[in-house]
Image 1 (cartoon, rainbow, N blue to C red):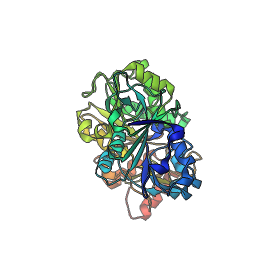
Image 2 (image 1 turned 90 degrees about the vertical axis):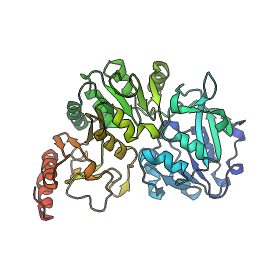
Image 3 (image 1 turned 180 degrees about the horizontal axis):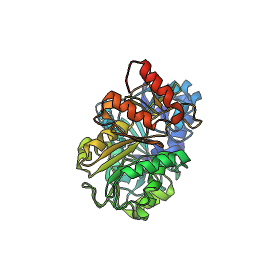
Image 4 (image 1 turned 60 degrees about the horizontal axis):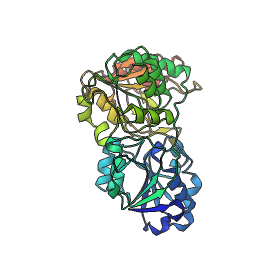
Length: 420
């Protein structure tokens, strides 16, 4: 390992023609390194950037003249460049295997770390598939960041894995919880009614997960197992709603792949000491879900057709989402003893003009096949689809569609030769 200053880092001296550069998602992005990479773009031979969910200003359309974009996710600030990117649809559960097996090329990995008191380093806020990035990369560049929380588990990095250690930056990307709308609060209320005390929950990030967390105010003895967590986790634990005492696996511990929140969450994770960062090899696997007690996975989609097929990737002709961990957790909810898989979303777009329950997905992708769908929730009710025929699915979904769109939906369903 060689330790250098940021000014001494020259990417042109480390890269080879055709190289792919990758970094962790969300708050795992080492800002000083990605900014330096962009600043030196004129010296490079148009390498590729492999990225998931981003929440920074790093990726911009004008950079396409200097970089090739390989996108795993179209959410957050990644949306600015996905129209120019090679899109790679894949589930989070498969990412470690895809990377380690060479199906996804990674030559240079950029990470940020903080020294651990007992030796080695921590990634602080991220685990998911970051260890696989580190293992696969030919060149490993780590930025020292003293603002990262001291977290262990799969967030640990050995000194031997780092080729270049770069001084320093203390910025960490904040991802505050957004404010839910009145409709999302009503959807969340209905979701919370489906979740019993002592269940284990998976929520994710965004307005709807934040709303669901608030709607769980009267629950007790819940557990948390999730791909990522946000600041709402702190409220749930401090208010005694989450104890993790009855999870079946990892009792007493919150398990997640990433801390996608603000300094409040990062400080809490360090001092609380019972939040485990784990790889996607563990968090997103069916075997793990089967060991969890009453695992209730709560996720959202962009739209769903009347048979239960769901699209979580494309809206208005633009790639806005991702497969991500959605399908993994949809399956996990029904694999857990006493568990449920809940897909929740407002019944219409915010302006009310377009129904999010549609007669057909047309040429839009089926992210979640109908055979995987269990429970669907909108502000108008709950539709349990598991085990239902196609006609019964349509009938139940029509009942929870927005009232302004039900007649048109039913008419389209009948015109296609179906009966509901």
